[in-house]
Amino acid sequence: MDIRKLSDALGAEVRGIDLNEPQEAATVEAIRRAFAENLVLVVRDQRDLQPEAQVRFCEFFGPLGKRSRPADTRHEKSDEPAEVMFVSNRRENGRYVYTLPEGEMMFHIDQCYVETPARATSLYAITVPEEGGDTLFGNLCAAYDALPVDLRALVDSHRALNVFTYDSTQRDQVGNPSKRREHVQPMVVRHPVTSRKALYVNRLMTWSIEGLDAPTNEQALARLFDHEERPEFVYRHKWRKDDLVIWDNQCTIHARTDFDPGKDRHLRRFTVAGGPLRT
Ligand code: OGA
Ligand code: MN
Image (tube, rainbow, N blue to C red; front, side, top):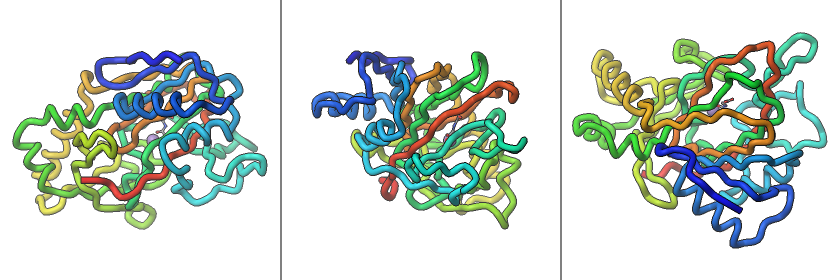
């Protein structure tokens, strides 16, 4: 096995391993260390990775996460683990039947609108378009460390409301109060292994900072979002078929670039469950 950094921002690429096979304890330990250090792992060339093997990989990092959204029986298949989701634009009878089928998606943190968001999320690329549909990952530990002093004082002493309506990809779709889920979270969390602080806000879902009036809120959030999305904190993943990617969902943000809706994009998704966020 060979592990190499993917960018200055974050991420490491793992080669020379076949995750369909069980791994030795020392290999698992090396993968865990690389994940704590790099926050995103890209494991290349996982040909025909079985759902059970993707689950076993996720369980290197903790217990498998339950799906956060209501079960969608339209695409349940009995031979797949119940925790599976597909990020996919495949259709049945002309209709999308999976999650996040189309288009660009703003930077976000999965499930930050519930009390115990997933610790990590993994995607396995079954089919991806040649162009577009890249996933961008931002390092929230580096973003925290580089905050200007006034913003650092603000996030260290405030909490923020995070909201989401399923399948929203842009902030202006999130607002409908009758359908949305929401939770107040700290604006700074600590990495569970390294104890590094991370800036816990994102453009898609972080709605308001507690105790600030509307104009102050808007201004502060705009500055925080622009800051954490700066190119020096971001790695852009261009998918290849058979990539298995896992990201730290407490210390990174991720976003998706646009792609041709006529091109097949089908990824299998499992999460690692998280406990209460550490502050
Ligand atoms: C997700 C997600 C991005 C993508 O699965 O949580 O944001 O590139 N996916 O499809
Ligand atoms: Mn996501």
